[in-house]
Length: 102
Image (cartoon, rainbow, N blue to C red; front, side, top):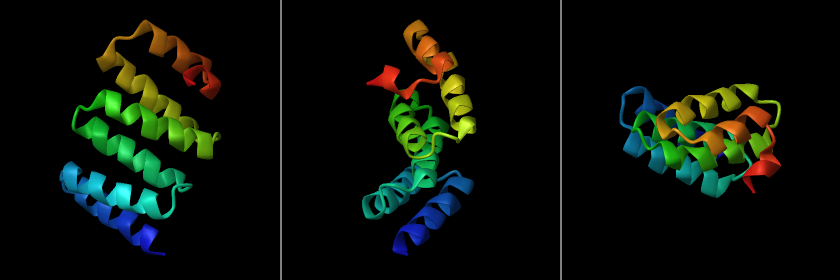
């Protein structure tokens, strides 16, 4: 269960605004267990907290592909669209269709 420890360590770093360290931990958790949706969401949040909005899109989409019922992640995506100012991205997110991103 070391993936869980990496995810928890990442959360501890993120909660203390050490997002670069959190990203390293979340990537370690994902490497061990790539089907853990929570680690993908946390990774996206850490990127967003660093204003790396384009970098958080893929982690959020990966999370949604693993856990389609996680509707709050669509909200995170809607939030970053404000900063990216992309009409195409706004439409894709509004449709809530993961296939539109492929």
